[in-house]
Image (tube, rainbow, N blue to C red):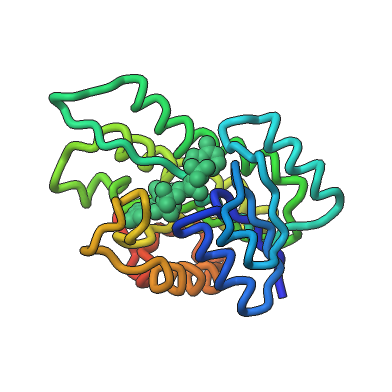
Length: 221
Ligand code: NDP
């Protein structure tokens, strides 16, 4: 049994992480800005008022944990605003960079002292953050923020390897959540998270710093 901390756990993929991990007997600390009825019904520890862009609220989270150690930190919270070239919104691009790239990195740094020996960190990035895989263009803010998150993950994997902490950079697949307008082309959170948990289970210090699809495929940078 391990202790997992998940950001953005009130809905979508984060909520499903909390559900599946709780169901298999792990301890879950679900963080969110506001809890949802679905999250409250899971009987996991819920930490509310955690906005990942606020250093103060992440510090508060760390204080609330006291000496509780986290074995797996899942940086899941994210936003997507699809900026096209003809409709660039610089502020939207900055916001996505802050939420999707900079804040997960700062959260990891703040939570480092809370991580157990040989802990794991999972950064939920996106295939849209792959440069080599980009054949459709557009989505400037989202793509730029997720490629930055991939780079943060790679550097973290190098820097934390001597401490025995491993890092996975993960793509959930195209998933039917609010972010994707509950697309009917996507898979359900249940299927995505089943794969994501398998990837985290298989993460070791030897394969740290890899960019995986939830289905196990290794993705190009
Ligand atoms: P949702 O939009 O359903 O959920 C996003 C979650 O992030 C919500 O819990 C939201 O909380 C939280 N969040 C957003 N901003 C903040 C913030 N500043 N502080 C704290 N929490 C915040 O999306 P998904 O579940 O689909 O996405 C989860 C992750 O998976 C994201 O990182 C996304 O980029 C990634 N992803 C998703 C894909 C998909 O197809 N769905 C594909 C590739 C990657 P609140 O309710 O308070 O807004």
